Length: 548
Ligand code: N01
Image 1 (cartoon, rainbow, N blue to C red):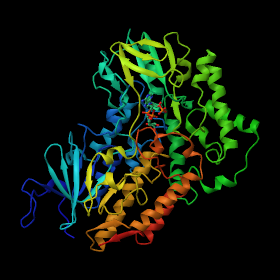
Image 2: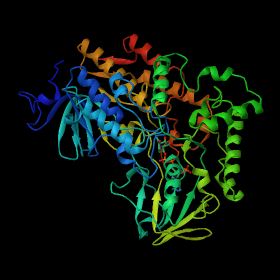
Image 3: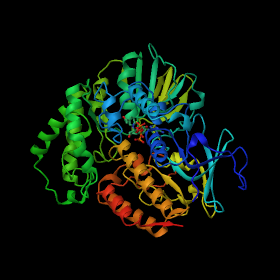
Image 4: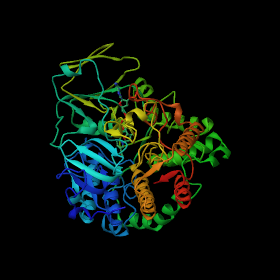
């Protein structure tokens, strides 16, 4: 297979090729310049491939470029929420807080992009509209909204799991006279709420981070809650050198652990684990609550598989809510019931529940008092009207498949990805799809992706795909495609792994349940030893792939 020159020397058009003179040619096109896309650019260029990046936003950062609502910060400790691939970068960058705020995370992405010289290879403010596989040349023809055509052998989708906002159609929303904001598309200029009556729709991670901050400014804040979420305190604070040193001492052990056959939040070992006495469990949750962060879910290996353990953890958090929120009716409305803790992504907050003790904050429980209509100056619910000057939609994302489904991918036989996924996403290992040669997805459905550390999961996929491409090139193959039987077996395994846990017992975005009409398929892989399995498949000549 011919290898074209690195990106900066790209030819535009080639003698004897069907390409138009203005077509951009590359070995690899990487769509998305968030953490995964940036690393993909770096890694594939290291392989000596020519790489073109395409990014919708005018800058790098992905979800951290767009999600700049007040209070936006990481819910994984920043020292972990960092690239692992470069010891130099790790040594150079110092996080200021245990859970960094959005601006600092975006600065980190920018720093990494500059440090590794990636910006010149990215077309910013450019969105991929459609992509078709050309059987004659074994290349993807990728078209963008700027009118460009990129022809590349490999198409790498690094479009993120949480990038397409869930734009809800509240009745009458278009009549609202004040400003409306979506947390996932927050304006870049400052937004002031001082003295205003503000409404927030949604109580997921974004809302739970935003509500305490907006409550400090707003004259009145009304939270419209459809489903209460479990949230634990972050106990955020400054980081110092001693924290970093402690982290560095254990980081390599952590990285090695990721490769183990036993690694996985909900491993099969969980099914044999004992159910500790309730008082023992509660004492442990108490310690973890005081310590802060989502580690409470790691208290017991069977917390996400065994109702007798999960129920105690859930009741523990409900008791904490009741002890923080002084009005008993509001406290009860904030208590999540009817689904296990941890099977919707747990929220990590700074003062969320206590915010409801403020005189200027009110909760509307939509289960009892649903929204009837948005009006020009407020929201009418079954019980009355709430006057509002500004409305914030914290309604989340079309997760995991949204960004992929809106690109018109056409496979070998003309089938689009949307059609192929009509009954739910189907992948082999969460990285490749039968019928879509040379198309790879980073942290796609069917991989751990959002379960665990999404930056490290993205790095793993990029490395694995790079190995797969190198394997194909060494064999002189110009086409790499997942086998339909391997894909089917993997999807069965993904479903079986989820079915052994409590995860399917909540209407979560993991299941696509937050988007009307979306097929209910549990998308992340929650089985054990994912990296170990990927390594074994690679060692076995990338079993389940065809190299032609
Ligand atoms: O979105 P969500 P999010 N009427 O889907 C409600 C990550 N994240 O942006 O549960 C009324 O969790 C909906 O109600 P219900 C993190 O992984 C990470 O908050 O569907 N309400 C829910 O309350 C997180 O899990 C960070 O009944 C409606 C809310 O809107 C993921 O992003 C920070 C509605 C949406 O909650 C998504 O979080 C922030 C309607 N029509 C987010 N439609 C980090 O720190 C929806 N809702 C890394």
